[in-house]
Image (tube, rainbow, N blue to C red):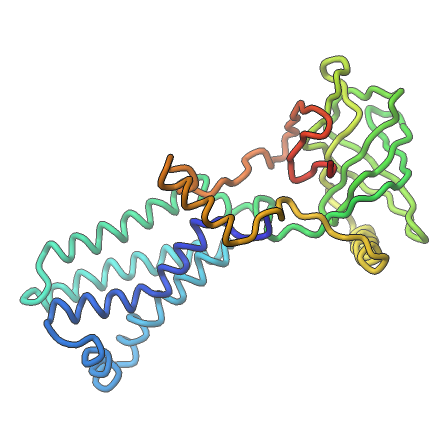
Length: 301
């Protein structure tokens, strides 16, 4: 799925329309028309005040949607500024807005800030490897290669590849002990690539425990020349008619959204983004049956 998590999209949407809700609520409490209040703000309100009312929520929405380290800080800063401004606005309008109104608004702001402090939410902003929607296209291929692991070189085939990683399978006669580091070498057209990598999962098919034939790997620290070659390879595959495969492209956004809503109301599942937690510098292996692996690095069935 190439979309951001639904909770992030929904919260961004809510922030965009927060000024409208706030305007309508203020007009209702003051017993005047929302349009009259809006016109008054535009005509008599200061530029700074109007930017705070209508501009900051939009910036907050964009910050939530961006899911970057910098946007996380901007969003939290806006929330704390809103809490500060809400208190002083309430002091000046206590005859219209009671203490209950202030408490309700501050509790909602606190709840939103607390939500973004949850590790599963925060990780998506601070670890770019967890943003699957930014992943480069992955292609099914069959490229002959050689892999150096455990100090020995073995013949193998690359079964899928992207700018971020690859899935490699060794011959049926080779049962390779699970490894952490790999040096892959292959040639495609006139491109000769030699690159380091590390395994993130292993596909076992009934072999001896601790051994496997297929490994999903991420590229390691690549020099500029090797990065350029892999980018050129990706472009070449697209030009040759290879169709990128997506992590989960079976559902339309409407069907996916309905599925998410049902999960939220039936079991609460989906309130927090389902961010993978296995992306780390330490290798993590999964034992799976052939044809059932559903990892981002899986071979297509």
